[in-house]
Image (cartoon, rainbow, N blue to C red; front, side, top):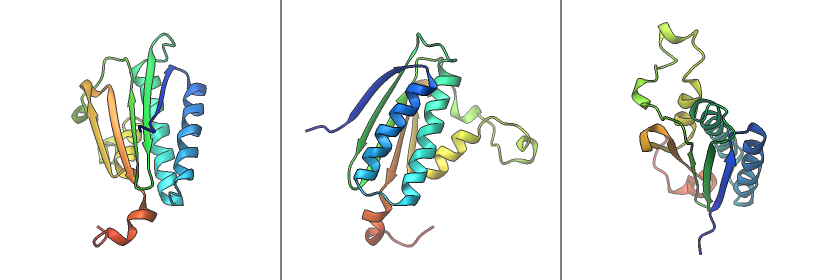
Length: 145
């Protein structure tokens, strides 16, 4: 049985917040720790904002598709927009000296820092993010990096 949550919404921030709440409720139900909950909330919010604002350019005729599969072990979230996509390698590193004053690229950096696995596909229109449940994997991990 597939317990995935599936949503298709217009490019609207309020719709994005409603999805975020539903997914985070599921994460809490599976007893993720506070650190993991924070990480998922931040990455999900950034991913939705990027899809709505940068991908679909706030065009409410364009849709954002979101799927989430949350288990006791991990949360896997996929967000896809209908925009032109982007090349991840072309986004400047916001931590370098010449980019410290720039506002772009920080959300992607945060998503990649807080999730355990992140993959960009379909020309940058889709992001798949995975966060393991630290509470359920703490005893199974090697030394922390």
